[in-house]
Image (cartoon, rainbow, N blue to C red; front, top):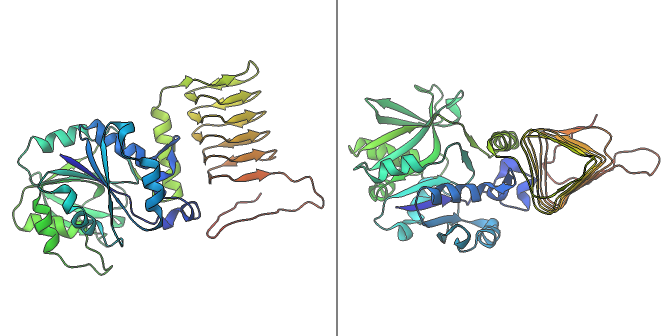
Length: 355
């Protein structure tokens, strides 16, 4: 089997972070989401992976991922000129996929437990497609599957009145018959070739389309709130380790990871939390469900339930920072200049809560 990762979206719901970086490269527990997806496919025994890229983010993704050698896989980048739907991405990748069966994985999804078992099921079967589903509380926000006798009988994209609570989570397995389906569907009202329409074609033509209902957690990291939730869930599953320096006046409690080169000075770190390489945490408190990426300084401040990206400085903030996603090379400091005032330089679509 081959792997196909879709990583061409613009990430508008994560702005302003995604004005300067691809959403798939935002780290969850200090590892870019896209890297987690590659590892999931690699761990399922697949070593030939295509990544759909497009727009302004393609060069950054290609530079970060490279040729795949760090994971022991071969990476092929496939350019999609415009994001015209998931089924269009499949058609764009037809030259790479050929006649082989493949797993398609959205590059901004995080799933518990991996995909090894379901890939094995599909590889050993005569099925034409297998679709990963998850029970959700708001099925009207997703593509929804209706089942009968263990098979998919109908798919509806974001129905007003859902007939089930089983949502498509963005992980699919197909054989080469999917290309026939893509060639026979028309663009939706959004002007896109929908993967739900292609799967529905397979169902109506009596191809074997089976569901896999995922029992663990799954998160689409397209919004800040979802990114923070995914960060919390992943952190809670990591094993604690200390590879940096922690002085005797500091306290670590719970699941805490201190990566190489990091320094913890006179501070309290309560896990689950991860402090990245060459960070410096001084006279500070880092609370649960926080990840701080590499080369960041937190001095005389408090932060919890947040993601802080690389090369940031958070210094002398009198109140605790919570529920925040802080981008690259950000400085948050307390100015000694009087009169007292908030001095802000904020990009488009920024959100700031002030006490």
